[in-house]
Image (cartoon, rainbow, N blue to C red; front, side, top):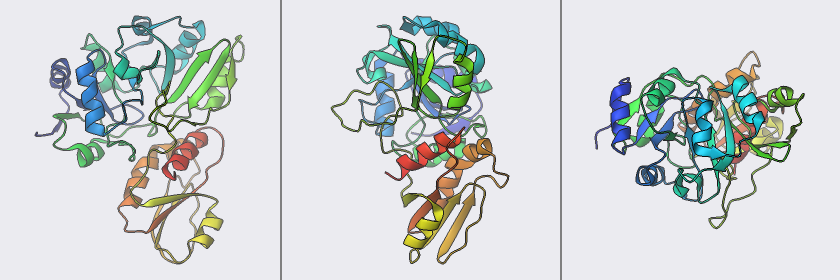
Length: 327
C-alpha cells in the first residue's frame, strides 16, 4: 500500500467513507481515524496499531451538541465544561448509546467523546455524517506522533493517507474525565490541567476527584476509558524516571541520554540531551515532550534518564507519560 501525505480534506473524507484509515492532525497528537460507526473500519485501527481489543478508543465529533447522538444520561456539567474547554484537549466518558459499536468501547458501556481543537480535524468532521474513532497514529505502546513525519516513520505502507496539519500545538493527549453522582473523576491527566477543571466546577454541585491512577493491565479486564494501561508511550531504549541526581549516580557507567525540564545536568557518558523548556514553561515542555523522546530514542544511548517534573498543571500529565514510559 502506498502512503500519501497531503492536505486534501475531501480526499481524506472520501477514504473514511469507504472504510479506510486516515491519520489526522489534532491539537494533542496525530490520530489514526476511522468511521466510529463502522465496526469493520474500527477493527482496522486495532490491527494496524497492534492495539489490544479491550482498550477503548476516543470518538471525535464536530461539536458538543453531537454528544447526545452517541451518549445518554449526560450530566449538565458536561456542557458547562464543553463550553469552556471544547474544542480542545478534554475527553468526556459517558454512558454510550447502542449506535456506538462495542469494538469502539472495548466491550464497555461507556464511550469517550471529545471535540478536537484543530482546524483541519474540525473541517474534516464537518464533511462527514459520522464521528471518528481515533487513537494516536503509532504502533501501540510507542511514543505518540506530533507531526506527519512521525506518523509516516511508523505507519508508511500500512495506511493510505496522512492529513498533514503541521505540528500538534498541545503535544500530549487529552485529559479524560468521567462522571458518577456528583463526582468528576480524572481518568487520564492531559492537555487540560486538573486545577482548571476544578476552577470551572467550583460553583456547581460537582466536585473533582484526584487523578485516578491506572491500575488495570490485564487482558481480561474491561477498561472504561482510553489511557488507563500502566505501560504506554515507551521508547525502545529503556527509560528511567525520577530525581535526576539519583539517576545520574545510579547509571554513571552507562551511555545515557538526558531528558530534563529546564536545567542542564552534567555527568559522565552523556551522549544526548533534550531540555524541554529553557524558560520553565510547562505548556512548552508538554508540546516538546514526544518529539524529544523520539530524538533520544535514536541517540544510541543505553538508557534514557528523565527527571520528574513539577507536580502541578501540565506537569501532572508529563509525569504520567514518563512514569508509564518507564514501565
